[in-house]
Length: 124
Image (cartoon, rainbow, N blue to C red):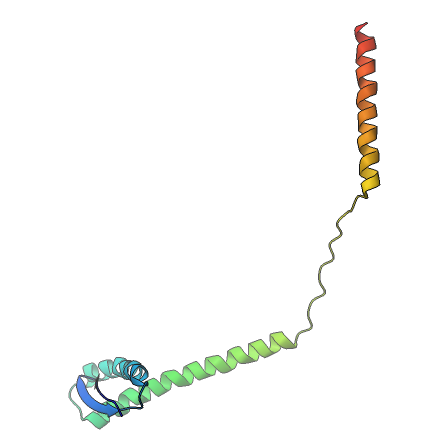
């Protein structure tokens, strides 16, 4: 079983953990150390147990706030999921049949031909 030296509040502790959990233990110790630093700074020297108790209480207080936020967000998600889905917006896209396109192209060609003849007669 691996043993790690972790530092919390400026004090070093030897802690054993399961193989493979070393990184988790280091991260947890760093989080607790971050809570202990202001406690030690404000209160000065104190026993290990008192420092750990205060840091643990501060961390627990923060976790209660996080738990409350998670509960509130889950309620919002549940409300949103319970709402009926809005009807999809209907978008109509005009589709011109191929026969109509060909007829329009033929009409355009005829109109150009007529216009060319009118211009030739106007010049003459």
